[in-house]
Amino acid sequence: MNYIRKFALLCGWLLIAVIVFSTLSPIALRPKTGHPDLERFAAFFLAGLAVAVAYPTRANIAAVSFVIGACVLEAAQLFVPGRDAHIHDAFIKALGGLFGVMAAALFERFATHPKILR
Image 1 (tube, rainbow, N blue to C red):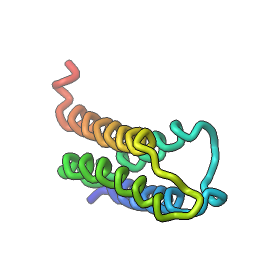
Image 2 (image 1 turned 120 degrees about the vertical axis):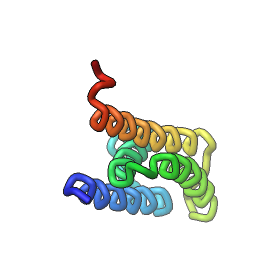
Image 3 (image 1 turned 45 degrees about the vertical axis):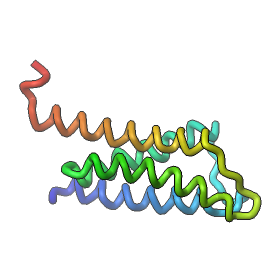
Image 4 (image 1 turned 90 degrees about the horizontal axis):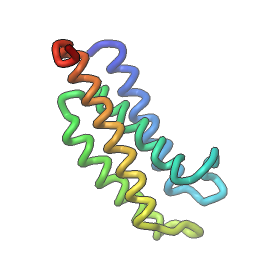
């Protein structure tokens, strides 16, 4: 495994840990940097990108995992006082994860098959 994949592996799992903490912590501890939908999408996009770079042969599993994970995390908010779950939020999170995985998969394909670009 090269250094880029190792770094992506570290970043991916760190981002997933931050996402889980941010999603299931009290609302006062949730980081706020801008529009909530943009934050959700960006966090899942970056995590999906990093995971798919770390595990390039497992992009399909990563994509399914991000969709299921987004739904499970959103539903888990029902058990956290002061938090609420919305289908819209789960959709934005899942979409971010999927786009991140797709971006990494496309990059991997073009990087390993340069003739595609010609």
